[in-house]
Length: 590
Image (cartoon, rainbow, N blue to C red; front, side):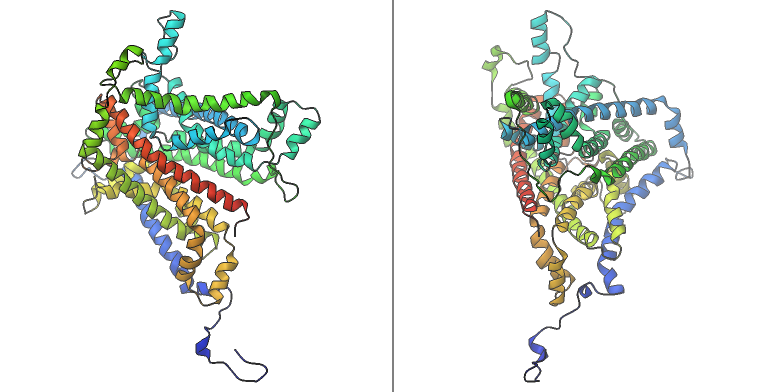
């Protein structure tokens, strides 16, 4: 730097040399170092499972000279077996009907809570957050009791009508749809709440001033404006329902209603396992999910045509329901009762019984805490909790660490950004049971002990949940203006310094939200763990399934209640951090 007045030069050692904007990334080979490293790591994670699935489905099984030869027999046997078409039809029927139920109930609830002046709004959020912390397998088990032959619903029906018939058979397609629809409605509510919170109220008010009724305004204005989000959410839930495992195995299995995921599971658990058959089934399921995702991506691309929020006069005011206000409150209370209260009461009742029995006043004298004493004193249950926490926390940490770097490279359009983005999103078409099959076969073929370890389950979770972590990181980086990084680069900071000192601190809320989300779903995940867990590496969801299958229902409910309390605390933390992130985004970001 030169002093113009005196013509003297300052010592260059006192000030670091400034660089041109963007030069901190490096040029040529240096600019490719970070992206190439990330591409290598992602390829190492994602490509081997794909190759294993393809190779196993296209080669013969067995030992000797005949093993490993190219064949299409696995696909041919599936195509010739009518069970494929029955299972595919059951999968589509189950997924479509469950999606409709979740969207109708969760979407209506979101509109009532966010866009209207209906009372009891906070109760809906409490219900959703606690539901996120409850294992799906516990929800399913509770509803099998509530809707069972001796459950309170069917008993009340027989008392009122005098009929010997059931009000509803839980072990049926409609039972599966009802339970799956309620499982997904809390998440639909939370996601649709964000959509309705950003909706412009002026169009609704204009419709009311022109004489439209409440129902006309809701149907022709509110839901039409939210149609892209509703349709996108429906496609997302439909895809997740296609991959569902808990309800099909616990309800569909006893009812002999098989779907694609249960067919894959049964192929892997037969003796000897039909690995070629299972991998061929897996590729068929991946193809169905991929087609659904193509439709979802194309629809989301055109969603901006329905935008109603502009920079002028945006005020998300509540919609006045008038005399129907308490009807909205009744919807909120009904959601609380059916989604949370009834399953919770069923879980508590059975966990306090020496054996499963109907809800009757005469049974109150049998109440006992013995099941909780067994659960809290048995070291095996503590080991299950430890395994589950280590796997879920480790997978969440690794996934969010990779998502942080990948999201930053993609948003800032480094060389190879497109390849990174595509690699990260490939696992989104992998159902959990398919990832489990791929990692199971891979762990048996590698030259070091991997099968039945905590590491292989953690690896499966990282692969499966990485796209979710990427969404959190990607959204967070978008809120950080690149000028902050450019300023640090001009001042002499390098790539690692900018990521560590600028990007990482500003991304902490988004990264923590993503970490807790992956931790929650990982801690309750069943479809991958049931194939990969060994005798000493079982996790909570697998142990609950084993106990339920062996008839130890009272211990399942006691264990589930204790685990749900712990997971609810984690879910509350997740909700608080997500709310803080949304509030930060509402203030304009960075």
